[in-house]
Image 1 (cartoon, one colour):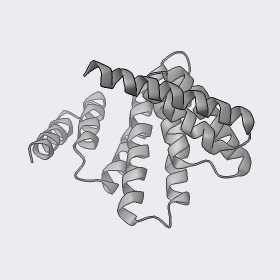
Image 2 (cartoon, one colour):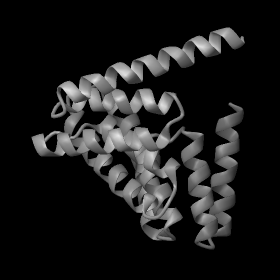
Image 3 (cartoon, one colour):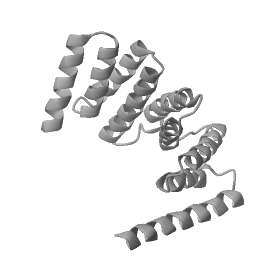
Image 4 (cartoon, helix red, strand yellow):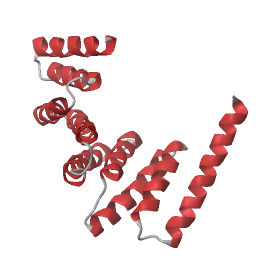
Length: 184
């Protein structure tokens, strides 16, 4: 147990070190920045992951192609960092991820594209809800639900938002649907 965990941690640290060298060698390439963000995230360095993710997204935007994965992961990393402005920054990243998912994944399998878009819409709705923007949050989560109607986590978020909006009967129905899906 312990030796295997130490080996993975050492491997993750080595991967991050090598990727840091790669981004120094070619700082204008977004892909190594995306990989560095992932390596840092796996090490538990959320702040470092967010910093690398910001750079990857900036490079992608500058080239006209910000990837869904980079935007979505940046939103997750920034939201997990906390701190002032983190929810707003995550909100922007998730919104951009939803747009990128619609635009960039047109050639992907329909089920893959729907799942990715639903994840981005759900995350967008969660951020809007955290900001107290219940109506737009309900719209985003509703869009996620239209794409993935059998996703229990979407029903759970919809129940939470309906409760926040004072729609108790709808909140109860959504919670019951979530429980039904989780027990299936």
